[in-house]
Image 1 (cartoon, rainbow, N blue to C red):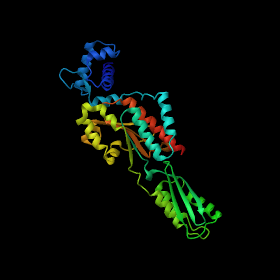
Image 2: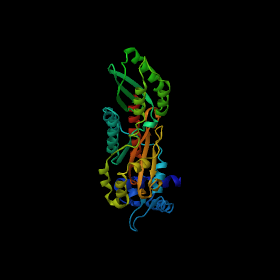
Image 3: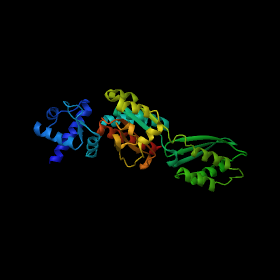
Image 4: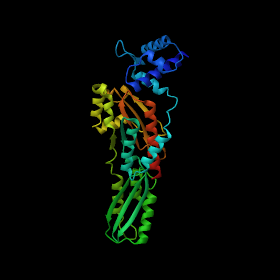
Length: 337
């Protein structure tokens, strides 16, 4: 009973501190929250929480603020992530459904996530090497010229032109289209490349090596593997009181995409949202920063990560809900192609 009450006091301190940006006193807690106990009991609970390292007193005459340990307990004890409102869900769906290609999906996602959380949002482009081949289309533009179209499970589309040494008949084109799709469709990139090189012979006297080479080259283009999109840097202005400790290091990190990718961590599947608070992250100089992230991709296959980074004083339940919701919508878009 005492433990549950102290957890309620900690929850109230976290919520008030995030909302007001001011240290929280016992009088304010009693007035704002129906804790059902006397101010003296609340003071005793706050003293116990402080002794255990869950809250701290920044100044002798001030109230208390949560520590990293306090935020961690608060996040770990969240029974549910608060759901997005119907209006928020409609806004996400309407905004993301208007995307025309993968680049547009990523750019819209990062802007939406930043707007929902009022934090810096980061979206990693889907990692090509972990995606699968959805379809290959071959289109005859002229008797000796082909347009090769590669469609991946990430929603990425690659197009290449191939000049042939000899004419390819309509029947031969149908046979070749069937051959390359049987060899590659549904396979991860590495297996698709191996399959194409092994099982696609010359067709109707036409050397198909050039077509296979172009396809394999398109699949092996890893330029997007470490690309990320960032939005919402202006939101850091809200944290001016912690500029030197939290904002300046984060602004510097935003210039280094490798650091941001490491901050986001490994992509997780199944809707699991990872929260790393303060010093739990990989960089000591970002120990005043928290990261809320999750993986996204079609059919519960995490191809990349998206999330937010910001000072530890954040609305964790709301941020976790927004990160999860945007990831689910993006995954659905990729799943539907």
